Every structure is written in C-alpha cells, then in structure tokens.
Amino acid sequence: MPLLRRDWSRAPATTSRRLAEDGKVQVEYRPFDLLSGRVGDYPIRAASAFSVVLEKSGPEVAKKFHDLLYENQPSEEAGDSVSNEDLLTLAVKAGATESEVKDAIVNVSNKDWVTKATAEAQSNNVSSTPTILLDGKVFDDGRTVDDLAKNLVDALE
Image 1 (cartoon, one colour):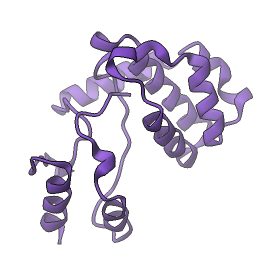
Image 2 (image 1 turned 45 degrees about the horizontal axis):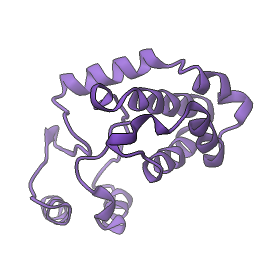
Image 3 (image 1 turned 30 degrees about the horizontal axis):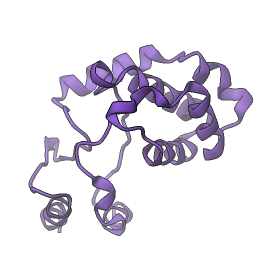
C-alpha cells in the first residue's frame, strides 16, 4: 500500500460517501507498490495481504482491512516496522477468517498480484495517492485536500 501524498483523511468523509450514494462517483481501492524502493517491502506485503483478504473474504472485509492498514500505516522512516503477523492481525480484526488468509499473508503469496497492479497503475500514469479520475482523466484541481474535495463536488454537480 502506498503511503499517502496528501492527507486525504482530512477531506470530509461525508462528501465522498454522499457522492457515492448519489451515484455520482464510484470509489475503487487499487493498492499497488509506490514506495518500496524507499521504505522497504511494506507496500508489497500490505498490498499482497489486501489482495488475499479481497479474494478470500470479499470486498466489504477488504474495505475494512484497507481502512485499518491506513490507520496503522507506518511512517516512511519505519516502513518495515509492521510485520506480516501484524498484517494478519489487522486482517482478522477486519473480519477475515484467520485460517483462510494466514498462510498467504505470512508468506506474501500474492506478490504477482502486486506486480500486475503496480504495472497497471504505472501504465495509467498513477504516481501518487489518492488518484482521482474524472471521465477517465486525472483530476488534480486543488492545492489542498479541502480544495480538491470542493472542486470535485463542483465539477460533479
């Protein structure tokens, strides 16, 4: 999972939820490896674990796992401070069944999934997170998260 370039968590959560509920936006979580060259292999391990949870436990649990990964994300200086066992603990906390995900998370079994996801992100010129696409084009109209959220709402309404 890439570490976030913007503090997207500060954006009004109700805005994105409202836009999704109104059918104006579709939210997709596409973890990929953005920073492993600088922070160790945490992004690869976390994205692999996400893919395992998605495959074995479904999108609802994967979303909860995503949120827990975000809340427990290490700093760039301490990228390897989260172990595979820590990732497993978060997956179970999100609702995954330990026996179904343990081996694949602990052994980082879905590296190929991460490699493909990363190649797809690169081919779509995704170089930061979050990336917002509006009508298939990167939407980056705003200097702050609040500006970006407001400008996105204005563009959609």
